[in-house]
Image: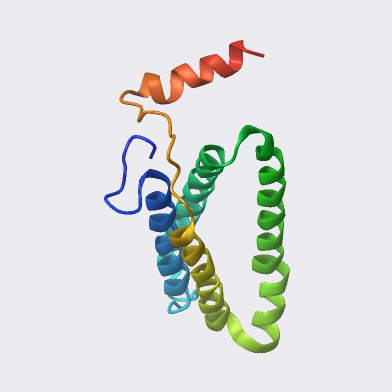
Length: 154
């Protein structure tokens, strides 16, 4: 993903926005499906959601690294983990409880999709990093060299 820059909002925010919109659409689409008869579509959307959420996590980590000064990255990581854990609680236990008591599965999927709207707004308001590393042009530059530096610098 780092090799390609979306044509909107810059290299980091563009990918954040793209993954968040895809997540919103995929999660909302699950609310329109009947798992008993449309299991293949549910599974396909689950794969899309897994891919997009993992991609968003990677891009968000890159954005934090680019935006935060080195001395603030530890606190930034701690806040990020707190957000991740709260998200897991909301999308796990609380979602099950709300689906059972009030919303049903369809409503719960739509609520989860709607909860992405504040994330999208935050992405739109966030600054795009100004000092980013050059875009890698080869697999060696993108993967092999950074991995080698990490492994041999320890």
